Image (cartoon, rainbow, N blue to C red; front, side):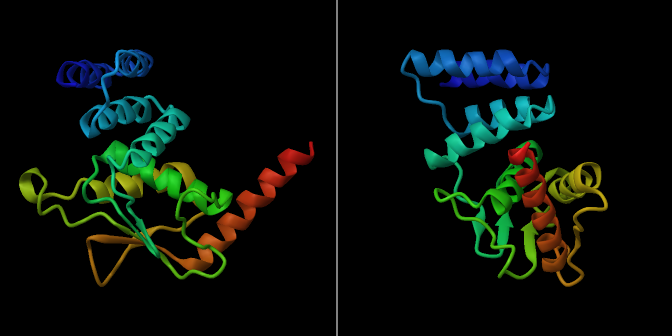
Length: 185
């Protein structure tokens, strides 16, 4: 596991996501079970290359093996134990699930739920005590859903971000309508 994890981490650092996935496939075919470090590196390699579908598939696979605890609890998503690329993947998957509403995973109920809270932490355990996750998630929202879905810092707790329920409901309805429109074409 260690050698494969190191090789996949090298692929992550050199942004060679396809090679990272190939190493993961080879690893499995040889009967070597990937661990949380292996999955984190492979997810990061895909996420950094903007291969979000692969990153989410890997994240789901790791969750099914219970390598990542389910960060989604009722109205909040706890990212504190994740790297920034894995955390962004977890948020993307949580948003997708709010629209798709899968039976196999818990998801935030956009119709009946309240605000969606994303716990990023305050950076107490990061090098230099600076938060890494909060700016990464805010940047992701700004770059990917700007103007369509609001995400802001919780004024009462700087270790949390809040997606207001009304913004989330409107966004989810627009996403569902767009998906239905694509199906009818």
